[in-house]
Length: 295
Image (cartoon, rainbow, N blue to C red):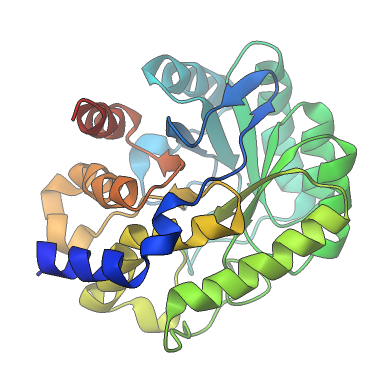
């Protein structure tokens, strides 16, 4: 059971990190004041394998319409992916990803929210950033040496995801180590150096809560890890860059009320000083954050 005693101990052990501030910057003309105001990232899935049915669209027109709805609901950013990260999902090659993504990115570049494209393929990163995407959601650093210069050349931002493996589709068992946050900190420090050496100046870091490791199938183990990571997020802000969290679902606990799971995790992530909330449930998550903001 999560208790105030546990939270107090977390704070006592990491008090110096609580006051850490992160870089603030603009993307496509929108300024993000991360240190005072969190932001929302809505989700669009172009893969029929994605389990969160409310976010799945099958045509470009439907994706464009959903993106504008998410923006109206309060999302500053919309994240679009053409390949699911589910272990059983069909792999989607670069050509097919581009065929699905490019019409949507081009249509929204001038009139819609900031577009984030989720991929780990350099060719997809290149074409989508050329088409007007403002953020690359990099779900694996196996091709980072090729991808970071592409992000820099297009004056874009990158979300560096924590993945134990070359990408989110090629993972085995999760190594917790003595302190998973320390492992993440070391990983992100290395990747931030690689990205900034390539000329990237706008960086988010994402602890990768939604990826499907073989030893995180037990719901109690997985959810405990997710909760601890959300509440400990402030420790990663010592790296100087904003934190983006993908909010999970915990279907085993929420059952038919699974659409309430992401707002629940948003509460924990907010307490941990998350800067960007990636969510399928923009309206519900915004309500949680607005309520916390009224305190």
